[in-house]
Each structure stands twice: as structure tokens, then as C-alpha cells.
Length: 129
Image 1 (cartoon, helix red, strand yellow):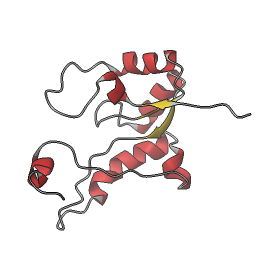
Image 2: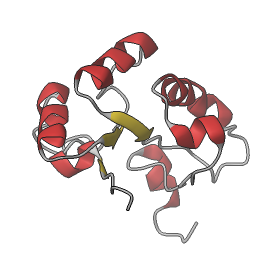
Image 3: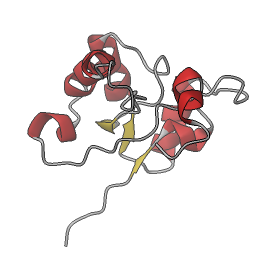
């Protein structure tokens, strides 16, 4: 019988990229509580929540005994004159450095959604893009 491994996401602790969302817990507390709840992996949360320096990111995850399973990267896909590759370069580097298997071996799923709130989201509001 195989054991079940459960991952979490910082959004479950209220960590969100939306300005004015409310009080944002610090990474140490969130990751400590994740591990304490029995979670074995996390996604990286919004930009700036965890370190962007790959060595520092790996150290933070190693210190909390958490694996990386993915990340939240808002990407604009609806503008023909915008190349999303530029938006993905840094986050993909972090995911690979953190050992996210979805990126490394291609065996996982990439979920794509709206670029979040703000100018990108507002450009689509009122439509069904």
C-alpha cells in the first residue's frame, strides 16, 4: 500500500497577490504550520512570498522539510502582442531549482488561469475571454 502525500498552498493561510487582501502571514509561520499539519509539499505562492534566489529558496524548503510541487504565476495570455515567456522565465527557474517534478520531468499538469486582479484582469472584465 502506498502512502498518500498531501501538498498545500500559501493561499490556504490567506497569502494572496491581490493588493489590500488583508494581513499576510510571514513565510516562516506559514511553512511551519504547513509541516505541522502534516503537509509534505507546497506550491511557492505569489511572487515575493518566498525567496526568488534559488539557493535561498532551496534552503527555506529544506529547513521546513517541504518539497515544491508548483507555483502561482499570473500570466497574461489574452493579448496578442504580449509574450508570456518573459513572465515565466524567473518563476520557472525557481521551480526547477526547488525540484518541482512537474517542471523537471513533464509528468505533471500545468494549470493556466487569469492573470489575477489589476490592469490585466480589468482589461477582460465585462467579457468572457
